[in-house]
Image 1 (cartoon, rainbow, N blue to C red):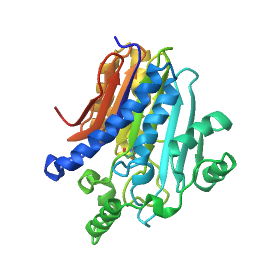
Image 2: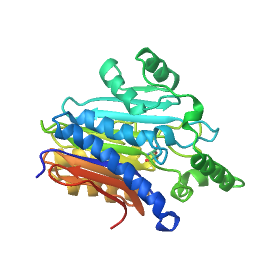
Image 3: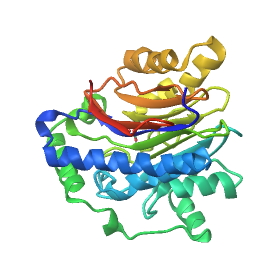
Length: 315
Ligand code: ASP
């Protein structure tokens, strides 16, 4: 079993080979490898799993292809609102931010919430005020503008025209390519686990909607006694199924192994509720699992003694 390792995702959804060009696929894979390599290097040099997941997520937050940081999707009113969370499996400490609009790397702010505040989850203007106090890197609105995401919002708005809202919120948002999110989980040489998730949320969402990513136990969870988990997919369902914590709880209270627990969480409760998406997980023994029930999930791992591995579709 590996002594240390990192697993990442760059979002799950209706990723089809039909819409993918070789050039775009190459860009995604290169982004995943850059993220994996940056986290792996920290672990190999004896750094902590928290550092590694934060760094790996930073890389994807800075790449416009992923729905986090720079490539965040647009809300219904044309704003970019980002959520992020990080959790330390050694102490069960966690930090999260929701609905921030000008933070270059929301995962860094989540870590500061964990380390420099007495709270777990800060939101919107309050979170940005906290960011200012701690000198966190900010960016103006246009930094977060990407043509691809803007066009996705226009498509979603056009589809919505003439349709009932209830039907929309319960329909298949994957078809509108509303998702994406990035995440990382890692085990370091000292046996500590950590998880981090960062997202631009859902295209065309309204009313200050917050997804599962910054909700500890839904989209992000880590406990040295069990595993570290980061999810991606239709957040409403992950919140109702408490998916990330479920993996840990199935291990802790049911004695399941990581793979069985992770697959039960995705193909059991989440799928039964009608939710779509996937998760990445690593346990304290270095076992990993990356189940998803969508056509694809950008994902990869880099384990002690191995090589960086990436995949997009089911294979
Ligand atoms: N889970 C995220 C959310 O619902 C989106 C995603 O993972 O694609 O906000």
